[in-house]
Length: 179
Image: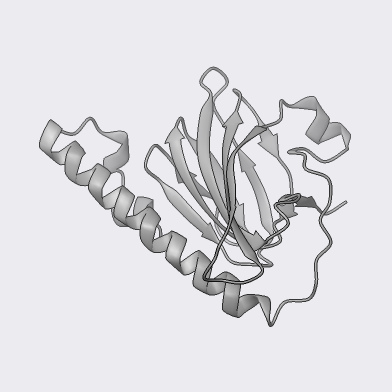
């Protein structure tokens, strides 16, 4: 369950200053816990996953529907080898979604935690339900998960996430599209 789901629709309200501080603290604690889960899942799950070749880093696959809408922009923040987890690194990206942006079906070579910084995003993992995430909302993608889609449904407001990946130490491409 994501922190967003456990808080219900509270992230859409304007909380008082103490409530906002508690919510921020809970969100930060959730990120730390999900990051640790990503590290453990990446280390132990990698032994059971088939090798995945890294595709080109892009946020939109070719095709008329995908190319008709704006695409998300990735800005790498950091990539560091994990000294206590040989062969793995942690990579942090800032991903900006312009109004009406859409990213089609893709997957990642490792574990991913996404944290919504601003705006609203709709996201679907595998064939599960489509979730709606506002600021402070999170989702986690174990290795091999199909990210069916992610979109910014707003025609006027941008959205932004911080994505934290635990993957192989080459700090290479992190998004693989299913053509």
